[in-house]
Length: 170
Image 1 (cartoon, rainbow, N blue to C red):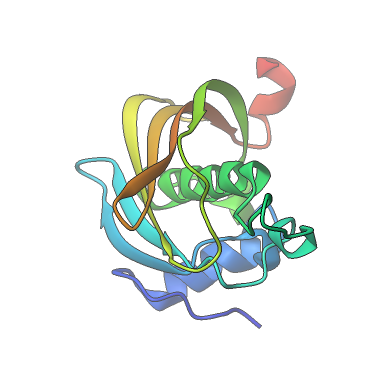
Image 2 (image 1 turned 135 degrees about the vertical axis):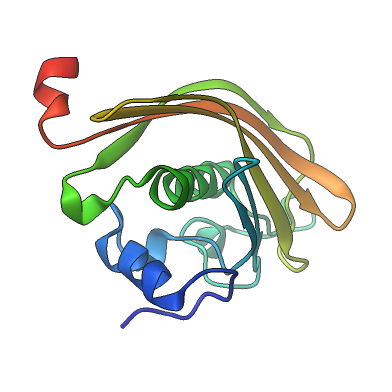
């Protein structure tokens, strides 16, 4: 069963995205979408840090190692946001043969620990796009905040292909 994720979109379209997403729903680490702006190439969203997270839930917490959202989880969030860009802004539909891969992390700055408790405010913005009929290349900047602290900045590229493009493009 698909969970409800509040946001400014047709709920049926989000359900279609989640039901066909390249990962199972448990790996979609976004809890609310507040902005989908195709013209600006911008998504704003929220991650509830008190939810069960695959690595954070396995931490051994102490005074010297506070509970936090792991770097791996933050990178997975960038993948979720990147796939939303491809789906909602560029028409890459998983059930129509499209798939994608993050192919370069140009920069990943972990500025502060993303502590368990306050939610993370997520922003992803397309800074460069190359769109063709069978391949979409997107470069993003990611800014994740907790309260008023920047916890993550990323500059990353992902490529999306249709099913026939992989054998001729790689």
